[in-house]
Image 1 (cartoon, one colour):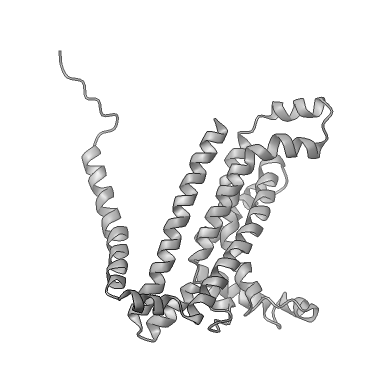
Image 2 (spheres, one colour; image 1 turned 120 degrees about the vertical axis):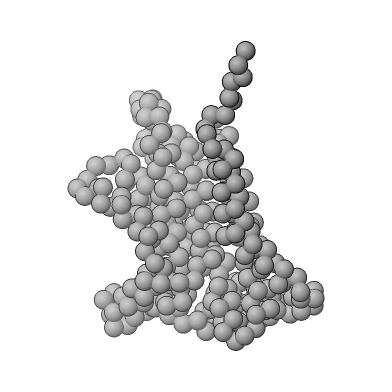
Length: 274
């Protein structure tokens, strides 16, 4: 009998080789170079580089701002996803497309626009500043731009989940006498919770590494409004390459940890759905 080719797709070796080459050149080699450069430091030098009061303040500001921004993104993104899936309104397709704008817009442009709008003489700042709300060159501005780049992850994670929900379960709940709030809390919310958590984690991970938009809207004062990514750039400008690489290694480790958490959340979401 003639042998049957068990491969579903042709070109497996070529596509696999291209994928491995791409990941090696663009991902593995730069990351390995970062860790190798950091390995040249002694443990004492590494600790002195990554645990200075300036670095600790940058880590604290980055983590706290990213967490608050991810919480806001989870709420805002959930509301937007619900409106886009459950309601029909004029220009819905255009509003849906605008959700992806932070993915395509250069973050430096976003930071420049936000800083222009919220300075005391800006379009929004002239009304907010007299009320004591200062977003330009402050921690509030950092959180604002982190929300801008983070909420699309929540929207795009939740949309397919909301679209696949069984409407019959909601109708049955209403017919049995449950209120709309009870139906949402006991029927809808448990189904979308894994998506909200995954979107939150994605928004948090994205905010941890943000630089382009924050550098324009933050005052970047060391120890006060300097985030970790800006600290790395400042160390490079001061020709402290080893210290910059050490701080970058800390950020990379945090990013890998977030990726591991996101993968666990996705597996949990699949088990939840099944």
